[in-house]
Image (tube, rainbow, N blue to C red; front, top):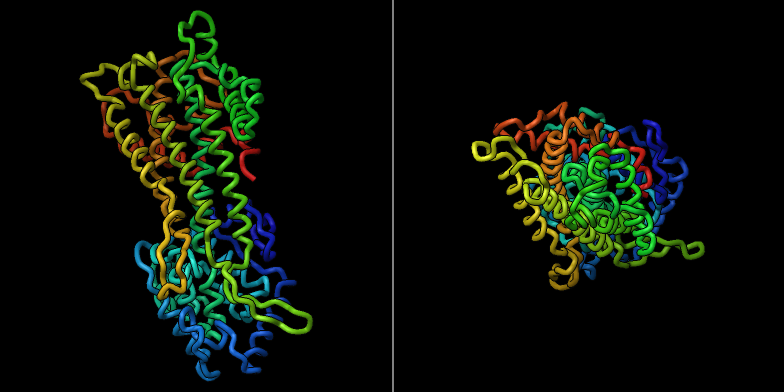
Amino acid sequence: MSTTMNLTLKPGAMTLSELRAVWTAAAPLTLAAEAFPVIEAAAAAVQAIVAKGDAAYGINTGFGLLAKTRIPDEKLEQLQRNLILSHSVGTGELMSDAVCRLILLMKIGSLARGYSGVRPLIVNTLIALYNAGIMPAIPAKGSVGASGDLAPLSHMTLAMLGVGQVRVNGVLMDAVDALKAANIEPVVLAAKEGLALINGTQVSTALALHGLFMAERLLEAGMVSGALSLDAAKGSDSPFDARVHEVRGQPGQIAAAAIYRKLVSDSAIRASHLVGDERVQDPYCLRCQPQVMGACWDIINNAARTLLIEANAVTDNPLLFKDGELSVVVSGGNFHAEPVAFAADTLALAIAEIGSISERRVSLLIDATLSGLPPFLVRDPGVNSGFMIAHVTAAALASENKSLAHPGSVDTIPTSANQEDHVSMATYAARRLDDMAQNTAVIIGIELLAAAQGIDFHRPLKTSPHLEHVHEQLRQKVPFYEEDRFFAPDIEAAKGMVMRGELSASCKELFTSLHP
């Protein structure tokens, strides 16, 4: 893809920055011209197999345990349509437009690599849906992450057939009406095309990428709010000394410590207690931030590498390969989403830990015996409860994340009469990342409010230039907590800053090396 508004997809060569851009906003999509001859050759190979009459799984046979059932040529179109209708059994809330855009993009890229045997018509129809902003109504639940994301991808394919509902500009409408308005003809699926569309890990991967991109924002926001908490509590920046981290050698830790040093550099609050401070060491939630956040950074980047490979992968079944002058059909198991499940599980660990250490800093700040600040960060405590119950909310969400962080990949359940007897649960593993990220964003938002309150109690002293800018941004949305007031809107405002990436945007140059 290019970095201009018009995105040119080169199958197998997408980058994470391009995937982030599609996740963030829609932009017109075109497919690189060199992809079409490859697509056409694979489609012709499928037609040759049909004409020859030999049985080939997914082309002229039944599916799963019914693979031995030979289907007559005159029923192949009906076979593919029935496959989509019978497999559209999802349930639950609909996936967001951001996730749907990623699903469509990755499915286009996978089919366009020329191993799936679909006609150019299929790829062009998916591109037309994407460019028209027609988002298939895909329920979030119903996939076990093996044999492909069958149910959710079937719901995606329904939109191409003009069946069911879609979402356009946030409004649900019948697919047939949306296609007509966009001048898109409903497709009639040819041999293998239905199976190629619904086999694959694109839904699991899209959900995991959604979790990855949120985890990146949470990591940055957690580092900014953690640095602000350090100054609010008059903590020491000595634990960020580069020598400490170099002798350990962990790359994420070394990089995180460098960012913390820059975040708190030139703080007048820090300068005010360099001499005469009786404290020898800060609690771990302040002192060990590079160790914790650096470790989170490392596993987030490891997950990113896995998910980028998967985003560019061909994961349907069976696949077409050239063997000399002949095309051969090979059945395999690329639809098994174990790599995605493992990546999602490690992202869950990072998201939970980012929230966990943030909650500990909120607890520290409201405890006058540890922070040196007014109890519960409010004047006239007793009459005012201040941040008392805001911390309870943070604690509740941190605890909830502990349960949600239990790995999904260790679970499996047999399906399809034991033909599909080991599954990845990648779709669930990835889907639950959104709930976890929302929880952690609230925790960091509460910490941001608490830390900013602490900074205000140190006035006229100022924190570092970077953190003063963050403080100013917050105060434009949320005033100083002078006395008890309806607090939930303030927390939502701070959470919004976290989710939109506004905290790290205040000091963006510090985070340029964070993500691949």
